[in-house]
Amino acid sequence: MSAAVQSAVLGATGYSGYELTKRLLAHPSVKQPALFRVNPDPTQSPNLADWYPQLSGNGYGQLVMDAFSWDALKAKGTDVIFFCTPHEVSRELAIEAGDRGFRVVDLSGAWRLKEATNRAVYKFEDHDPAQAALLDQQAVYGSPELHKYAIEKAELVANPGCYATSIILALAAWTNDGLIDLEFGVICDSKSGVSGAGKAPSPTTHFVEVADSLSAYSVFGHRHTGEMLEQLGLEASQLQFTPHLLPIPRGILSTIYVRPKTGVTAEVLEYSLKEFAVGKPFVRVFAPGKLPQIKYSLHTNYCDIGFQLSPDGSRAVLVSCLDNLVKGAAGQAIQNMNLMFGFDEREGLQ
Ligand SMILES: NC(=O)C1=CN([C@@H]2O[C@H](COP(=O)(O)OP(=O)(O)OC[C@H]3O[C@@H](n4cnc5c(N)ncnc54)[C@H](OP(=O)(O)O)[C@@H]3O)[C@@H](O)[C@H]2O)C=CC1
Ligand SMILES: CC(=O)N[C@@H](CCC(=O)OP(=O)(O)O)C(=O)O
Image (cartoon, rainbow, N blue to C red; front, top):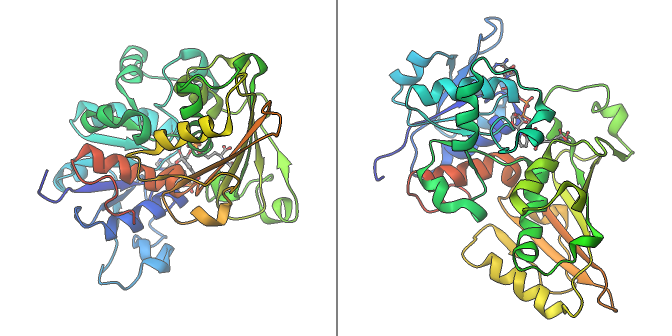
């Protein structure tokens, strides 16, 4: 598509919505995004630049958030809506958006899972279960590295979870190439900055609880586990995922422990990762022995991957890093939009 695309953002006041809006404003092939809030509080400024003064200046003018309505979206000539909203809100609105012919990139977990058993963790109460079930199957998991061609044609793209992205991109090469002995299981240990929990502080995420500490949570029950299993084609018994809350604002580091099959060498493992990264501009594979750190990918759309093999070849440790608000949310969403509208995958992201 050569004409500039009109995007709309619902949830721009949140962390991922802000990161998305900032990038859409600078994107060379899209018009200034239309911004909406559901039931805006009249005592609060409708100008997003008053919420995020980082957005003031730059010739953008007032970044007015209008009250959300389907008519207002249509009046703006919207081609694609980004939902940066809680799962339950996205679950409801995406169905209506589809009925009205809008293409959607949903940043929530509402549409990521194909298996009902994995989706159960969300406890969705669908008004029209049959229609929701249909959309569950039509939605495309928005990992450009895995589903590029389906994303290009998709009406509803389910942007992946941040932890899930860091694990799936690190493991996909080795699981696809059959290099891991799955009988021994795969252990995924991730650490995330606190912005992953959104802008509203909770008793477990406010400053005093998080600062100078490190804690594990959602052991045996984190909702991203289903995404990892479905996208990597693994059984629940083969993967253990444990997230941790790190006292920094943003960034994820995942450490993944696997047993390579007998005879698999470091050269084979490295070749597999490098082959996987070919044609994937946001996957960076590090040289042998060099491991990613959170600071290398902060504020970028990269997922960095590195590994080390034990001297006897019996254990390999993968390390991946990304920015949860960029490759883990807003950046990946823009990458998906680029594919949906025929732009270079990298536009607006470098
Ligand atoms: N933070 C992260 O690292 C990641 C987040 N995500 C997902 O992206 C989505 C947004 O997350 P995040 O930016 O962190 O969240 P925030 O809590 O920072 O922001 C939530 C946004 O949703 C809006 N909102 C809240 N309730 C409603 C409602 N009932 N109807 C309409 N809008 C509502 C808020 O608007 P208002 O200000 O008007 O209340 C706000 O703009 C979530 O689904 C999250 O799971 C995905 C990957 C990573
Ligand atoms: C640190 C933190 O709390 N992280 C979030 C995951 C953020 C994410 O990817 O969001 P989705 O909710 O869209 O899956 C969590 O564990 O719930």
